[in-house]
Image 1 (cartoon, one colour):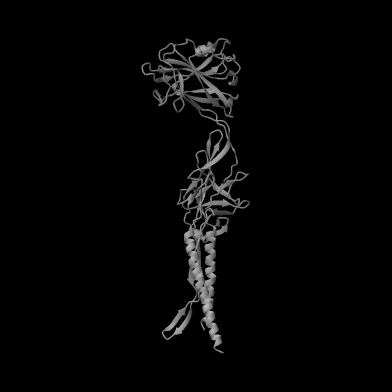
Image 2 (cartoon, one colour):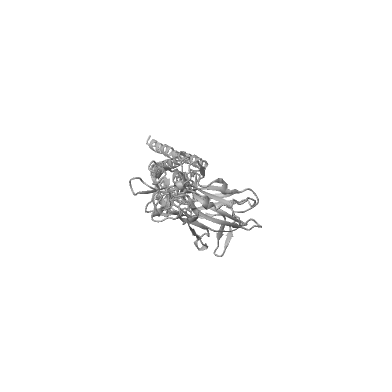
Amino acid sequence: MALSSALFSGISGLTNLGNAMQIIGDNIANLNTVGFKGSSFTFQDLLSQSMFTRAGASQVGRGTAISEVYASFEQGSFETTASTTDLAIGGDGFFALRESGTDSLFYTRAGNFRFNNDGQMINPEGYVVQGWAVDANGNIAGSTIDIAMTSFTSQPQPTKSVSVITNLDKDMPSKSTVLSNAWSGTEDAPIGPATYEYQTTVKAYDSLGGTHDVTIYYDKSDTNGAWEYLITCNPAEDLRTGITGTESAGLLARGTITFNESSGTIMGVSMERLTGPAASPGNPETRVWDSLTVADCNADGYYEFMADFLGGAATTDNIAFNIGVRYNGASFVPDSLSTTQYASSSTTVYQSADGYGAGDLQGVDVDVDGLITGVYSNGQVLPLYKIALAKFQSVQGLHKMGGNLYRETRESGSATTSLPGTNGLGSIAPNSLEQSNVDMASEFVKMITTQRNFQANSKIITTTDTMLSELINLKR
């Protein structure tokens, strides 16, 4: 008799609807879990039994079973956060993580990362985020490695270029003094204020990150449209061989700036570099100067002066001097911002010097391409790593490990790692976390229908039990 089979059909319904409710409950429980992917399920009927009738053989089902439980990998919404290491993936892909102490790799959509006390970028369970180290231009090489801050200092860079853009007052009278002859590096005040019309100072760096004042003095020449300039430093900081400690110390270069008298625009510049002290002490006119030609201009068309703030043959720096005019291979031409000679007070319009001192790491930033940059106290922003994203042939084949982690399996295929935004992978959303993709309203509807189905299947058992009772009562 088929009544016993009806009991087992009802039991199969109750059992599998209970499993379905467990899946629904897990989804609802993880509504606030970062990067969580909800699961869905489908049912299938069980093997049918044959029943013979006058019309021939017929089949009757034996109940139901869950045929498949699969994850829904649709992207969840993003929540904006204040942490620069909170990351979300806009599109396909997974973050790759290495289990500490092993070579095992796991994958996640949850980007709530932090740096630990070893400088490693980790998830809450301590798994280390994977990426590539980059060079100064942001280019990657080699295989993926742990993202870890191994150095917290930005190395200093010496000054290689000084830019000083001024206006020199056309109406200033000439002092009729050769500036370089008025310089004495052995005096407390190497040059007197009565010998020049204007001066400005810019800060330069040596290769160890030390700072030095480079001062440029200007004096109007007796020749119309010409100004003499003098590039100097603190004599005590001038460590050039043969010059340090002499009256020539601190005297780096001199030259002439020429202007168009009618327009006040710059037309050209010359430069002489001091290469030796005075042959006759006390006679500045016997100092050794090297007159530069246009062939000595650097690749950008600027003359360079030489400075040595540290002492030693390998510590002399060539520093480009930019006053807003450059040699283009045929003649000197003014830049868009250049030194001028107008009938207004002498003033510094713009000045800067490259180079910088050592800096301490203040924080990190991540961009949409997954580039991690370090922000340092010296103002430098340096590329450090690029985050790796992984993709799979079949994400449904991934095995859940808990802790928002997945492991690759034979069904998923091996992970292929690439840069964000390439090979079909999504981009990185910094200061964001991907929320659970579970739709609460949809889960509540599933819960209601599952509950009603459970009630209906329980009726199968109670009704079948009543029928069996009637059958037993036939004996009475």
